[in-house]
Amino acid sequence: MKVGVLTSSRADFGIYLPLINKLKADPYFDLEIIVFGTHLSKEHGYTLNEIISYGFSNIHKIDTLPNGDSPMDISSSMGKTIEHFSAFWNEQQFDLVFALGDRYEMFSAVISSSPFNIDIAHIHAGEVTLGAIDNAFRHGISHLSKILLTSSEAYRLRANQIVDNNKLIFNVGALSIDNLSHQKLLSVDAFKAKFDIDLSIPSILSTFHPETVSLNKNEEYIYELMDAFNALSEKYQIIITMPNADTMGNVIRKIIIKRSEEISNIKLVESFGMEGYLSCMKHCSFMLGNTSSGFIEANYFPKYVINIGDRQKGRIITENIFNIPVDKSKIMECVGKIEESKKLSYKGIYGEGNTATEIIKVIKKIYAQ
Image 1 (tube, rainbow, N blue to C red):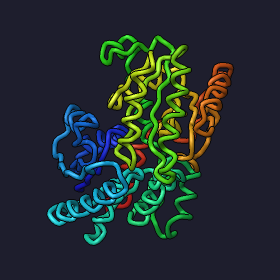
Image 2: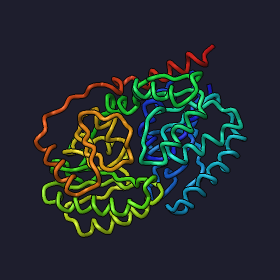
Image 3: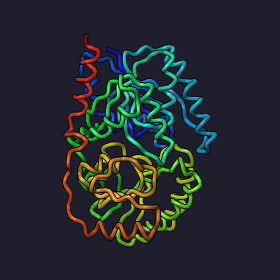
Image 4: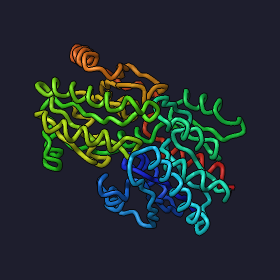
């Protein structure tokens, strides 16, 4: 069975990895990886090299990068992605293609496949992020897909409400839990040797992506966050992973770089890779930002998360997550609460680390007739 895996960024590839490894190892599947988006951007770390480093072959490379971060740049990139993928789907045949998440470039790749009647399996269907235009893209991908794979029972029920009832919808858990259950993460010493960052120092891990629904608020938000980091840097090492290629992503990036020059005890990282990022999450004191990894991956350790703003509004809120506005005083108050909070334990709502196996069972049940 010929299967493709669509991967457009460092974030989705790290999530995919347990599934990709099992597909590669199973003789039933002929696996090909379809790489596009920021994987091919030197500015974003050229993370194609990470994919190659895992020993994967049969890699297709499709250039779909936007020229900037304005609404017109993103819209033009969507058109470019549809055009380039239309040629790709015309030349290639797949029995099934996996699409993960909710990004605009993933939606563009999937919608271009629809005239070719390509079967799509959508991973992380049914979730909600009301503060990002990605919310519509995710549900659009689900409507265009044959199979919906959700990370929790609550999301399976929501996916069933979003799409027609004749869709094939399965709660398989989150692939990130597979990573965390089976991946040997770096020790504090190994992390320092690899990245020159000492996690024995109390550290805050942060990623802040623009809110693509409330564009006019993003500059105000990032200045407020950097003001909070300036105050927190007296007590904590601040580790910031840079934002993705979203609308206004470059604006956020430039402000982070400029303000970080004025703040001591701060580290800016383009990409840790999956192993490095999860290792940093494991050893940090807590997370502060608006990344989706604060909802599933952080829940596993579990790690306290200060989720700011509305980008992730609508996701399941577990006991490790504090939802607050992007406001320095609120952030400082929340940090104080975390410092006095009890130790947490993982509740298992996203599965127990066998999601890749469950996905393969679903696919064989449908296709192995």
